[in-house]
Image (cartoon, rainbow, N blue to C red; front, side):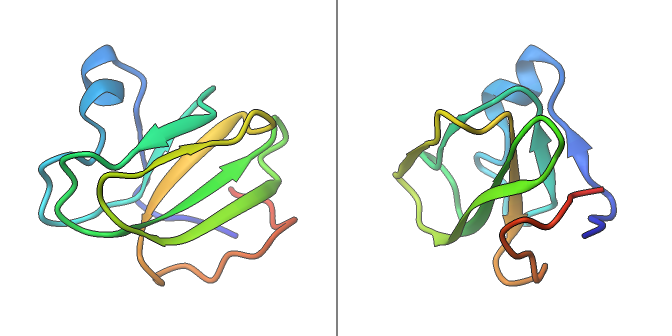
Length: 94
C-alpha cells in the first residue's frame, strides 16, 4: 500500500505535537514508535502500526480523541485520515 504526501515526525517538535490541534488530517508517520495518544485532536483518525519491515501488524479504525494506543510489537506508527486508505493486515507500507 502506497501512502502519498506522508510527513515523517523526526524532530522533537513534530513527535510532540503530531496532529494535535490540526483541523485537516494529513498522513503522518512516527518512526520507531509503538504508542500514540489522541489528546487535543480535533478529528478521529485511523492508526496503523507496522513492524520493522513496514508490514501492517495492527489497524485501529476511527479512533476518537482522548485515547491511548499501545502495541509493544509495533515499530512504526502511522496516523491517517479516517477511511481514506484501504489498508489490511499484512500489507506492506511504502
